[in-house]
Image (cartoon, rainbow, N blue to C red; front, side, top):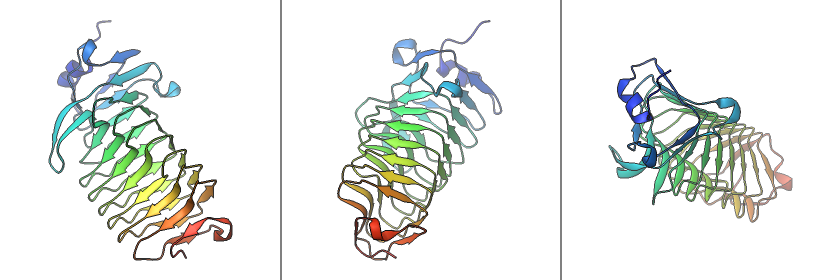
Length: 259
């Protein structure tokens, strides 16, 4: 009967275990928000997951000083055991990232990440999020990135028409399960010493390569499907053979050593 005007104010009142339920609208600097919105542990930020955020938009970003990355421009900083659900999220600022995940195991589900200048989600540090049933489209840099020692699960997402679909680097080791990665410049770029595990993903119609593997990265693929990628389905320039199980390599466009 008397809702708070801003998410910023609601976050100041919320305690662990509470849910901030949004009404339809656009939440940004013009409506009084102060970015970045920093979630607390155990807080849920929720709209209506059944319509995947179309009427519930958070747009904007602000300066965030990361422990490992220095200053960034971020819309939302996730926290351990926090949850973000049913929103449409964009950060159109220069270098803008919609959601920053650096600690703990938050859940990010049933959202739309559209039109951020840099990334929809960046996962770094030792964070281990569950990122499930989201859509990532038209983000200028990447749909998502996993760096440092990040892990977690990326499952059931639609990742299309971004600069790059998913970047996995450093020592990151997430699991990618049942995602559709299509229409990006490259679908997946895996580098550094990353060791992701990929199962049942559809990687198709990316402008250049479906998967690019470099440096000392050692991903494993199981029962992946590749279709109609522009140059190569699998482009391996790493120092190790690429492990691909349950996939018929005979019909794929492959360069580099693949087993």
